[in-house]
Length: 64
Image 1: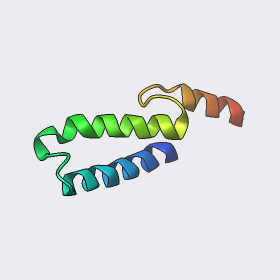
Image 2: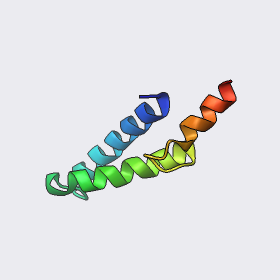
Image 3: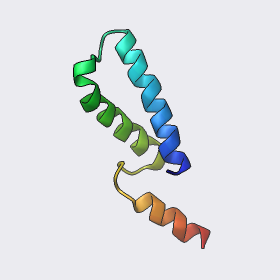
Image 4: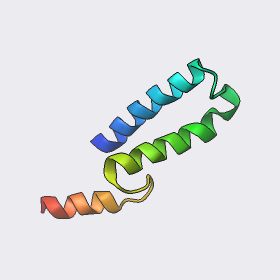
């Protein structure tokens, strides 16, 4: 897990916790919402959608 994954997971966790506190997310729909929030955060951080390894390939090429 690279730094972008860790950052996105941490931010997604905090966002989901806030949504649970205000009643926007419930335990029954947690998984569906967490996935969407995490992917949006990854897209914001990296410029690509989570699950698309193109940003990892780009950073590997840049470091060579």
